[in-house]
Length: 504
Image (cartoon, rainbow, N blue to C red):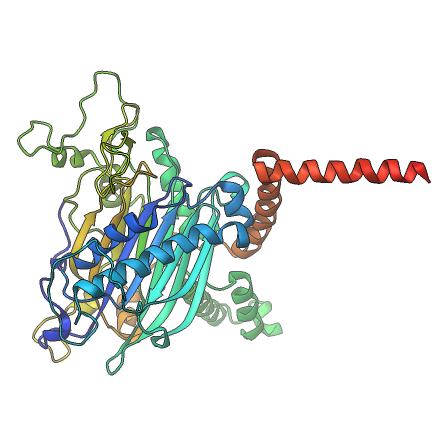
């Protein structure tokens, strides 16, 4: 798949490369958890591998994008029921970092140092240098943000949208936005979206519609409040203007006001002009619109095979739909060199006592193996690429690694991660200049939104959230053992009260 000209593999830390503009070391990892608690040590081992690949130090920020985090009733209720599932990931990440620091004793210093990765744990492992800054979910889908220095993050905002049944979050997206302030250099805005789009091969139009729902409904401020406040602050029409005596002037003023309102709505959208954007998750795009027949040919991981998996990527729906402008508008993806990430059948363990860092598997016969789990981003815009800013190299997204981790026994998906150096570009410089805003034919979503924001997005989400809570408790009471005990207890209490009242 062709990549943007600014995408390149970084082989060394930018901290030691003074010819490059300052950058943020970012790790994004996406994983469909299959509604099951993860094995903490095993997941930590795989995360440690991700931390070590093509890097000599720890990232500044880590974002975990999780789908099907827990049973749906737990996800809808949240809080106490969801915390154990989130805690497993926090524990696994901290364990991965501690083990990494044991094997890389100077990785936390300013000078990078390479060493081998180890599965063993130290007797006195160093304290994890990361803080869980924010964790949020919409239904099945969650996002976790870890930072080495939380004080550098300012103005954190959240956004969410559901596009499942009745706009609930059995499918949906959750986002975080923040300003990252470097120690001595510039600041930059970051937006992260974790999402889970519609499943099944034949649901391609619905996946595209899900993405449209994200563009339309994910707002980091209440769009209705933005519109209301704008109308209050706008100049009211005079009686002469209302009678049409100054039509041309009135038209110009109203047009200018409409542009200002559109800009304010643009600023609260996913495509905020002054922000970097990363979209990750189980996007569910397949390589076919139909299920495989019994005689279907599946990809092979053997490079000598005639069915070696890279040949199948040419059928990838996401690449085709994205380039046609029907989904993930304006976003780029680093070249995909890893095998399909879905769907796997996990085979019985070779030894009951063995620590399974590698799980035996086969591709599930009823689904075409596909690259469903992906991470994309907005590239550095054209009006910034040409500015070196005193450095010998121009600002660019420098991808260190984009790869899939091994399969875990608890899921039929493989985790995928992206390690990238994000250039620290001031929000004012990242936003398009006025001349570009007025230009026609520009497809960058920082310039012009592909779809207008729904002014009632927050109201719709609040109504859907109320439905989620009711549906969650209903499912919990009628479909879980804990719920059965609660119903039995309530029934016993009701019967006891009834007989006691009759006795008196």
